[in-house]
Image (cartoon, rainbow, N blue to C red; front, side, top):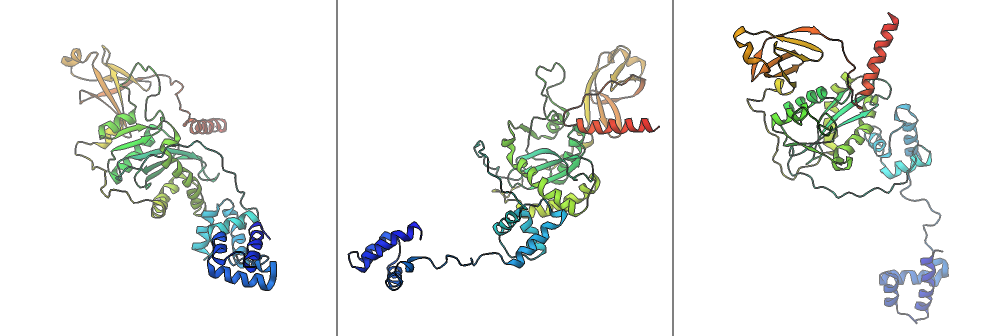
Length: 406
């Protein structure tokens, strides 16, 4: 008998010898008068045994059937399901195998047969919750998730993720080799052409988005990405901690779990096939996890006629022409070819170098200048950010191996 049942013995003895009224006993035990009458009869007939629960020693009505346990065990014996968690495993079992059991039952079975190790929760710092924006497109959280997405079947790469703050909807995904300006240009252009211009991007403090060098003597204080977003009228907001942009960080965690396994089952092993698979995966993911915004009005804005995306999403640098109308860019000296009467006025003039996928062009006050490469200098060691270091090492190793083979 447990402590609760032992306390009942003394009360029902008083009820039987009529030193305690049944209504008073009902209040003491938190039972109804009808329950007191029923238990009193059992106590009078069977004594103390009448107060012991009849459920002791009996099988629970909610216990998982053996056939369902075998179904779960067969699922986890397959190599491709080796690291599925209880929630994701329950979804696949219910959808594909017709399992009729709760997530907790699946988790308990996984723990029983050592397919899952329950972890103790760590004490974490508590951050104040920031309310969601009311409209879709009012704030879009952007982040790059570097991970072994193909589990060794393909190269390690980065997934660029665009999450709507109002609804947690995945607006755009793109696999790239690393986080760099050109790949962010390409992914952001695809997103804007598909959804429109958001009011603001919520980003981390990566050097693609902001100038982190204190006391920089050159430039206007903006990166190439910052200049492009300014031309489009999109505000950039830098987060001070990973927790501040927690929605996109949690979505990265979900994608590293669900997307990796979905690509494993689809036998995807390269970036091109993964990017082709993303729209199908994104649609199903949003159907299951996206929220409804508080305000149905969409804050995305359409592109204007003066928004030339080819020019906006290009690398633009400022240079000054020399007395001989030359300039240097990317270890190449360019000679500006113009009429003789304009040579004097263009000396020391500020020009803009625009680099796109098609090539390099030079402008002065919005007017194009004709220039030809004059002399190519020896290349210097390029500066590589920490997030691009792995990709650069792989390229260098491959080039070295080719030289050895030749």
